[in-house]
Length: 396
Image 1: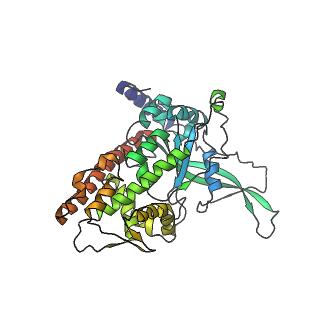
Image 2: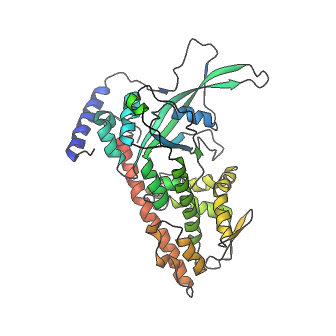
Image 3: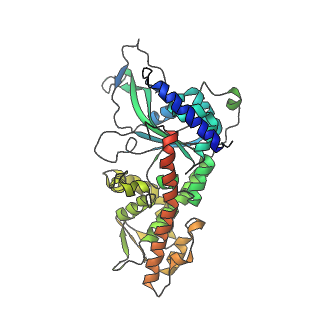
């Protein structure tokens, strides 16, 4: 369903009218709960949340949402993976669903407080319209959730205590089809770029149906698209390595080795090429370095890319040891092979260059850099703008 511009204007007017009324009402804090807190239980304690490392907690958070039609979910960011020495940040989660309109319809019923005033007034049609702008991703930032889990006394195994942990999360919802398109075609390089970096896949095996989901949805056959997403992600990682190697071509005084840590920094920076947030200082300028060089992070990168490096080594493209890659960055045959690993929209002969001209190879690398920025910039800009409407004034 599509919305006309006049409908959006009408919704906006109603929203601001309601905001004016709300300013004279007592404020109310909303909190989504996975299980309502039982204040009658003296063993249940509220505590500040430590760094999130437990997949069970991620699964518990996902279980607070409608799970019918949920194909895939992953966590990322400093609240999931420790990227610096500071305390845990917001927990970032992406949910890939087969039908965003149906999913938001149920989520609006069960957790309307996750949505902006614009979205609550406009309903599922407005949310669906917003979903299809930008990188086809709808974010809910600064949402408080409470997770009930068990903590164990190491000395007395039988002594367990129910504990309620509060988390602040941001979750994004995307169509599974759009996620796969971005991974394989670099349509927006938004989630594809996010998935160039370490993430934590969330176990959906124990997902339970929300009480607000219709019986008709509960009876639908579940189609598991995890394998399809995994293959798309393999293509995404191969393209990321290939593009990063091509970006290093044609440089003066370039030898045949590339430190792996430097390659990871290049990969991490792909999705920030042309990002207005980096250009305006809205994003941490050291973010790429933190994503790669924080102690413990390189092991996660190594695990992500081990199969890709092994495959490229077996094809004779490169050799690898623990700290560096060895390859001829200006070898035209190799560059042609790497180009074929990129999405078709980036398979330009000009990027390959000419064997007898190092300048042409350098120009090819710069052309690739510019084309990557041309993909990233529009999606990043539109996602930032639409946050005003999807998150609301106070959260955008």
